[in-house]
Image (cartoon, rainbow, N blue to C red):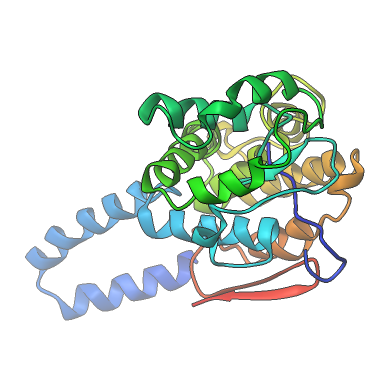
Length: 281
């Protein structure tokens, strides 16, 4: 499960639619409207965070919080111990040696490419799982991680594990709850940071707290009210742990998009994390 890289304090419209539709009806022949309107509606319904363009935005948003950069593809080689009790944190989503997801990643990489430069560290990764220990990893693990990050197979393994453990479950649950692209992203970022275990600060617990305060859109609730309830619960969860006490990735980023009713996570986007400003055209 990932944690924010806090290296330093400074681093780390229905009415309008009806008008437009009326203009379209005047400007276009009836048969043209009949042909285009259903297609447009279907396209709108099909868009989710798993749309490639939306997914790219999600990767940049998470990277702004995790790495203080929009260049998420530069993070495959990232690795350091950020003193959060999870051992080494590394890669595009913050795989941790102390939480099991780094172990799963290296096991997948080794199954696909036996004898890779990280394969010999598997016994040590199994031993340090659940702790912040580096035993059996130092002094060469960080060097070899960066070497592995030059391999396209290792990059693909990172992408696949990110999707399997974090991205796909978030999108699936978000669609089931009836939230749009923004809500699916909010779910994704929560799973990235908190995981989806059984503890009180996990994603499932955060969602449960939110549903106790507001109905999800799938239950007939208001999307904005529900997402605000979810973010309230998320902030509570973050504040339970010192490593997550800076809640700006919610307060000055996700909450801003909710307040602007940008449920489709449409660009341009402007937000701040840890005081740093970011923009996507």
